[in-house]
Image (cartoon, rainbow, N blue to C red; front, top):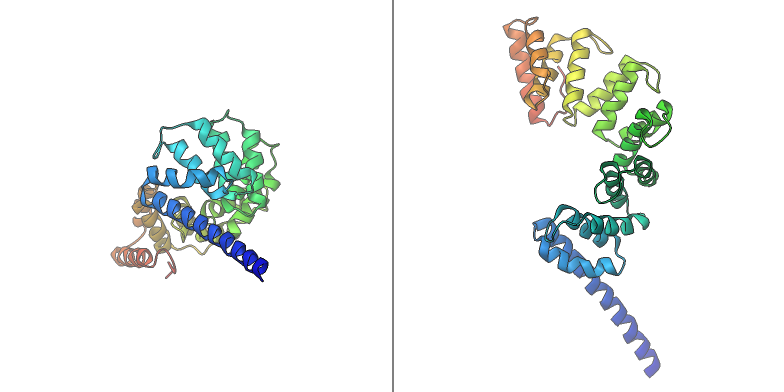
Length: 271
């Protein structure tokens, strides 16, 4: 009976240690999210040293950005690589970016593509989009539009707005996919509904030209108005050109639609 009790006590102690550990990581993450980087570094470094991938990633980020500690690119790369080697997807994406930019490591597009691929295969949409773009551009991999389109489509289906925009553009140009203006407009719309200003601008032009959608100057004005309002550099000129084709009633209707679209966070932006 005594042996059984000792065993149970050991198990309880083990669970208690796990609970304390989890609480310590949570406290460190909370400090990081609140901007207490020095406190977060102190809390998370022991867990990083014990092999916790989330702690390793956050410690690496703090060394990389100089938050709570003097900037140290080499230390940042070391911690983030440790997490990436454990299949921590966010760390893999960060490490790929570091190799792209030469931040804390020697710039190496082939190595960047390799890490993007690991994260992409783990289902990360950002990595899928970036890997697809590398295939289209032939950066760090052998140029392959079809392979690029396949990865970009996977990211687009996960709701990645820039991938949706890129897939729309690829359908416009028949780049790695069949040229299809209706498909292009559909993907531009999905990106536009997430606030992607270039997609909003391009969709506006498609409405103006009746390309892939029914010609509609009011909807063309709506989308270029939205793109302009959120900073697209060419949208204001397009908006004003389209406005010349509208009477005062049409402009009023367009402005009402645009305001409603903003209130609805770009959803149901239709007449």
